[in-house]
Length: 298
Image 1: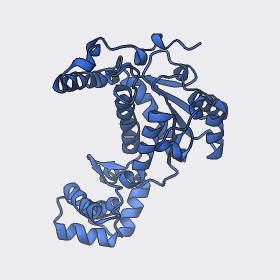
Image 2: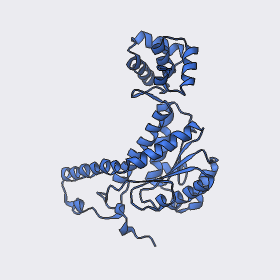
Image 3: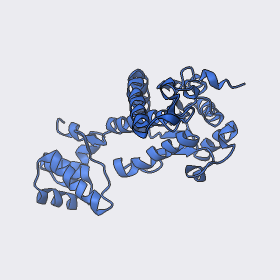
Image 4: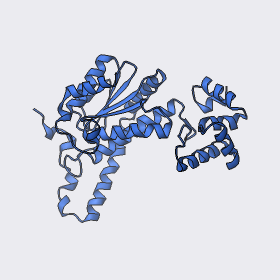
């Protein structure tokens, strides 16, 4: 028997008991104050997030994948973060995967009963050939979603690293994971509506996991996205801007380097910084496992 009253995400927030009587500005002020609690709650679990980042970097270095799996809002956030990795970091789409209970249709509409099936969580991981090189991040604000529990249990059986991201302490998904990230930001402004603070908390954690994992495998130089894919005019201008920022080159020099490197920002930067041709830059980057900074010291 599930006892919702014991879960912080389901409790009534004492600061919003008269939400329906507040002015818009009063309610918005309270919402803003409550959102401020999220970053404080995340600060308390930073060591766990660091542990997960290290596991993801290790997986990437071995050819493994980062796999997010969840239901409802949690699942959508995982799919969103996965979808942003290829354009931001130049990763192949299969490197970071987002799975949601009920499949693609569930991204825009509710699929009744999907989250209640442990078997469906297992099936979805089997469909992408989960293996021991992968990291599976189970997402559930409540921390008790059967779909996610089933997926994590199966991932453990396959020898993958398992991570749980929830918004309740002592969660069920945390109990079946090797790394439990439990962000307890307290009751929602609107009771039980975990698309609010819980959703924000999960989004912030996913930002950290994917961004810092990509930093760890050389997708960032300084604080610049040096593997961005210039697939449209806006991104082409961004690529030029990144090359200029990283090298202090002129616009013309940046454009020439990008043309010679066929739009590869990382190569263009390395060519300019080392004053070398494209073949040398490619060799240096390969030796440095894609880290520009290491090419400057080798």
